[in-house]
Amino acid sequence: MNVKEAYQYCQQMAKQHYENFPVASLILPRRIRRAVTVIYAFARTADDLADEGEMTPEQRIEALNAYEQKLAACIKGELVDDPVFIALHDVIGEFQLSTELFYDLLSAFRQDITQTRYDNFGELMDYCRRSANPVGRLLLELYGVATPKNNAYSDGICSALQLINFLQDIRQDYEENNRIYLPQADMQKFNVSELQIKAHLSDAGIKQLLTFQVERARKILKAGAPLGKILPGRLGLEMRLIIYGGTRILYRLHQQEHNYFSRPRLRLIDKIWIVWRAFFPR
Image (cartoon, rainbow, N blue to C red):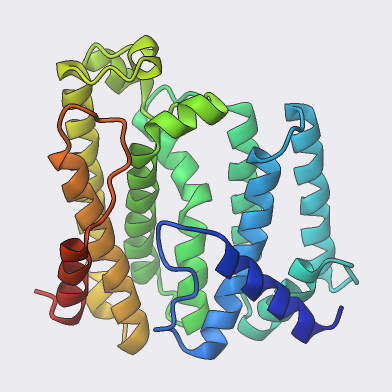
């Protein structure tokens, strides 16, 4: 497969998968958009190795280790007969991307196999540092605006979005993969047990626990929000759409009543609000 065909493969993968945020939005310039689909294809494939199919945990670790070996060969410039890595080698070279960020992503996917509970919020944020933050930093590098200040803002946004995703998927994460991304210390604080999560029991304790998590995620997202005004042109608009999208999902999570384990869906009025705020930020 040549480089052009490898890019097409990655673009097709991005189109076929549903995500909570637009993959390679049309707002981005074509050159950047094409690179984003390659980074997405790399992460999506690794994530599927960690989650999908009928492999045992040992087989998943083995598959991710083999995937990491492909990454190492790709970075060295060795021939890897895989469309994702053919395109990734081209993107890394063109944009001079920080290769350690790709290793961070793989370490997070590997952790999903070996760790299903988090004792405290610090442990969870360390996971976010490797599972979410590299994506934001890579986007900044694609645009050539990866300053220490911008990276710090981006980390706040990406960590918050990861926390929001956890809050939307509490039931799914538990039932499909036996994972709980709510810190155990917070569950104890609000007298919430795993049995309540298993039974989807939407009582006062669950409400207090999730209200606490929503507010914490909101503060982290707000701390990174200045990046939406700092970044220029299309990237700034894209970032504001993401920020206000996360803000609106938090609003819907906060508005939930009686069933705190359902996944909130944004309505037309929510989408209009997001676009309006992105074009006319305060």
